[in-house]
Image 1 (cartoon, rainbow, N blue to C red):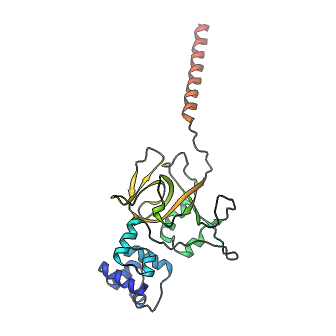
Image 2 (tube, one colour):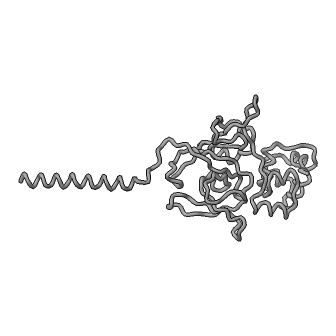
Image 3 (tube, rainbow, N blue to C red):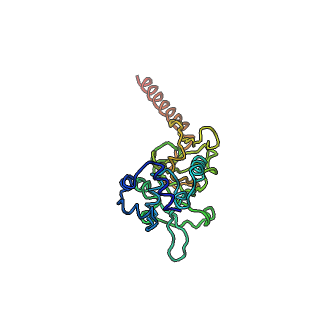
Length: 261
């Protein structure tokens, strides 16, 4: 089905084999071998083809007609091939860490087993972290989700069906245009908008919309690890108290000076 579907999707785009091969950065002969079923591409190439042709990797591999592809795209039900690091001895999944410095590489190589294996990994043997779910630890930057400070790490579980996301809960969303973002999600896939509303906890950042086609992965935030303490909610009262103390000291100094005169 892959060879047949690749050829059909390429023709739907109106591209020749040479044009698609150039966009892929591979030789035309290699692409011809894929379409004729004489060779099978690496997973990274399958994902790249799927992105270029506007379908999911699952649609590329199994073959889905155009109407089904469009329905799955707008409903958020696309099945994505997820690469996870595993313990070679026990075959148990590790939690991969995506620090800020690796964010750009992750956008390009999130489906490449070789890249994912280069990410640092760890195990988290606590009852809140289910062994039956896939987790990833993303480092965030910026102050759009205060009081969670910039530089924090968000522990998130993979969300395979985007229809289940939303409810104003926090998510890490891997997007093609905005990169890796940490936001609360309002799910509007079943409305005329057919999108996700991305909302920051910091009111200085206005909400914005993201179409399903712009999204590669969705991860539901479960916990966070921070090395800077969040600003407490009563910090404003502390500042007021500090100002009052300073005023009292100034008044006391003025009164002492007047008494000496």
